[in-house]
Image 1: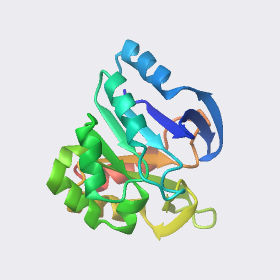
Image 2: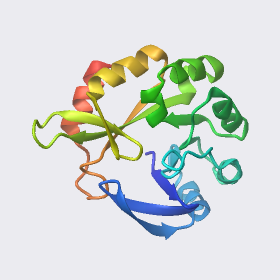
Image 3: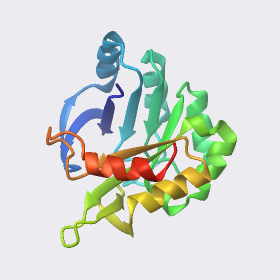
Image 4: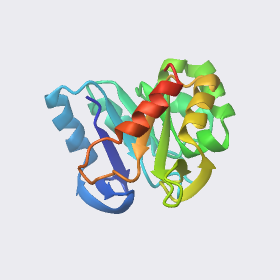
Length: 193
């Protein structure tokens, strides 16, 4: 079990369809709860960093890593392999890259070479196109359509060295409807990671 914590303005938030974030608590307290629950891994995504074009909050990341007793994956605002190296040195085991991986897939290759494939996670935020019912990858916290199919991007990211792919269904986000199994099966069937 890998819970995903969304951070906005240093607070833990919940969204519905990637919109209207509602504050639900302190991320450090959430980490402590998941330590007690003995989850397998924890993912923390700063949903503002890329939109605000700012670097990751290294102080916050370090505090999360110090508190976390399970492998930690961090994402948000990452644009360089130097940032990735710095975050890994703070005690984070995995790095999640989304918008910038799609804009600059070379970052995935550089990062995988620098810190290892097992530490590079590419996150695909996916939404169904209303008119064609085809899946499309969106970036910048679900605000920018790419016009690209998630299967193509997943294959490309695997080729560039990603160790894992995470799929977020924008349509199902926060609705307590469960996973988009059709989407998961399609992506899973197209890659071997």
